[in-house]
Length: 63
Image 1 (tube, rainbow, N blue to C red):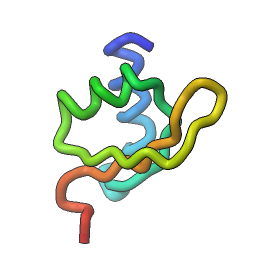
Image 2 (image 1 turned 135 degrees about the horizontal axis):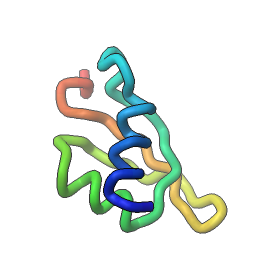
Image 3 (image 1 turned 60 degrees about the vertical axis):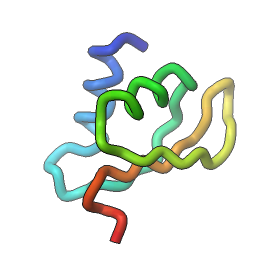
Image 4 (image 1 turned 30 degrees about the horizontal axis):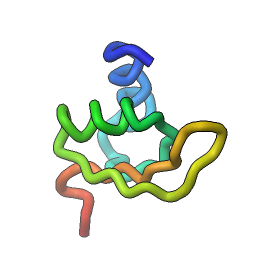
């Protein structure tokens, strides 16, 4: 997945801004990109089909 595809995927998953916590299946490279560019916590949940499910929580949604 390219940088633009990752950003589009996140934009679609968190559209509207009311959701700040989601589960997405990502490659290690995609997860590293998100960690490097956004204030988000990624918690691995398990592997599936060569990718890992992550719970992604953006800053301010921890409560």
